[in-house]
Image 1 (cartoon, rainbow, N blue to C red):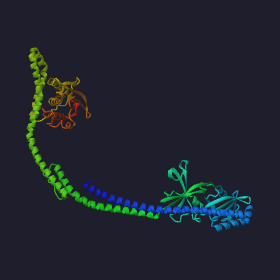
Image 2 (image 1 turned 135 degrees about the vertical axis):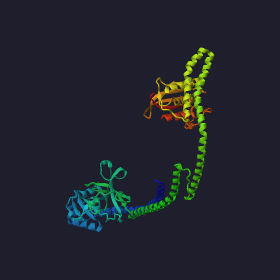
Image 3 (image 1 turned 180 degrees about the vertical axis):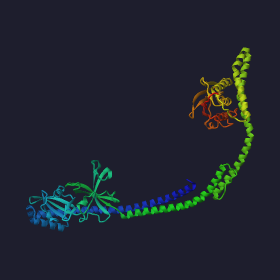
Image 4 (image 1 turned 135 degrees about the horizontal axis):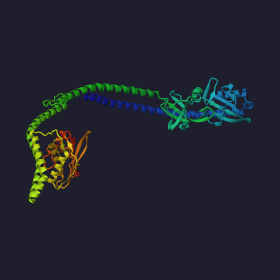
Length: 588
C-alpha cells in the first residue's frame, strides 16, 4: 500500500472509531435508562396484577360460598337437587350467576352429569368428566375451558363437593379472566402461562432456562384453540421483559382432565424503546457514513499535501541509489521536510568528500596491501626450508651419516617449498590472486603441511585422519597449499603456547548435491569470542599481535574462486574448527 493510501486509511480509522464509540455509548445510556424506567413501571403493574389475581380468587371463593348456601338453605332448590334437577334448579343457578357477575355456574351430580348450567341450559343432562374432575381440587382455583353457546372459553373456575339433603353434588363457579380483572389493561403487556419440563424426557418444546423445555400459552384468549396454541417464550416473541405473577392449576394442559401447575408470567414489550433503538441505529449509521465521507475527502487532501514532498525526496534518493552522487534534495515540504532535505544535502556532501578520499586512499593502499600479501605468502614458503636447514645443521654435528640420512628424508620438503615459492612468484607476476584450472591431490598437500608444522612446532600434537587414497580437487597446487597452510598454521599458533593439539580430517562427501571433499582443521585452543567471529575473514583483522590478518581473507577468496566454501566455528574456551569443501576433480 502506498504512503498516500495509508494516510487515507489511517484518517478513516481515526475518524470512525470516536464516532462509533460515542454512538454506542449514547445508545447504551439511552436504552439503559429507558429500560430501567420501564422495568420500574412494569414492576408496579405486576404488583397490581398479583393483587388482582388474589382478589379474583377471593371473589370466586365468596361466590362459591353463596352457591353453597343457596343449594343447602333454599328448600325448592334442595328439592330440585334431590329430584335430579329441573327448571327450578336451572332458574336458581341462572339467577345466581346473573346477580353475582359470574360467567358460568354449574351443579353436577357425583357422576359428572350436569344438573344445571347458568349460561347454557342445554347442557343439563350431559355428562362432563372434565368439569367433574375439578372436584379433585376442591377450593383451589383452576384455569380450564368451558363450553358456551357461541364458543369454548378460557375461565378461572373453583369447585366444591356438597351434601344437599343426602345427595352429593358438585358446585362450580367460573369467571372469564377479563371479567374478573385478571388480565393486563395495556395492549403491549401480555399474561403468559408457562410450564417447564426436563429436556431429558424427550420433549421437543423450545429450550428454556437451566436446560429445561418451556411450553407457554396466552392467558385470556377468546377460544380454546387459541388458548392451547403453543406460544414462544418472552425472549423469542419480541417481549423485552418479564415478571412472574404466581402459580395456578391448569386443566387440560397436556390434553385430558388432569390439572398441571403452571407459572403465570407478565411479559411486556415497549414500542417506544424499540423505536428508540432503531432511531439510535439509524443515527449511528448516518454519522458513520458522514464521518467516513468527511475523512475520505480530508484524508485525500492532506495525504496529497504530505506525500508529494516525500515522493520528491524518494525520487531524489532513488537517483542517488543509482550512483548520481551530485543530486541535491529539494525544499518546499514544510519545516520538518525542509530540515530533512537540508540534513540529507549535508550528508551527500560528506559522502562525496568521503568517496574522493577513499579512492585516493585505495590507490595508496594497493601497493602496501600487495606487499603485505607477498610477505605473508613468502614467509609461509620459507618456514619449512628454515626448519629443514636447522634439522640438517643438527644432523651435521652428529656426523656425515646422520647428515646424509636427514638430507634424504627432508629434501622433498625443501623441493616442495621451493616449487611453492616458484609458482607463487609466477602468480604474483600477474599482480592478482587467481587459481588455475587444474586438479591437485589434497591428500598429498595436507600431508606436506602437517609435516612442516610438526617440525616447526614439535610441542604441538598435530594428528591427521586422512585415509590412504588420493583426494583430487579442482584447485591449483599453489592456491591449495596456501589455503591448507593458513588453516593449519592458525590452528598450531592458537595452541602453541599451551601445548595443545590440532586434528586434521579429510573425507569424501557431497555439497549442494555435488561430490566434494571436506577438510576440517580443529584445535583445542582458547577459541574466538562470539562478537569477533564474524570479522575473522576481514582483511587485516587478527587476534594475534604478530599476524598480518590476511591469511583467512586470502584463503576464503581462493576457495570461493573455485566454487568451494569455507566456514569457521568457534566457542570461547572450547577451541576452533575450520571446514573447507572443495569439488572433486579428475587428475589430468
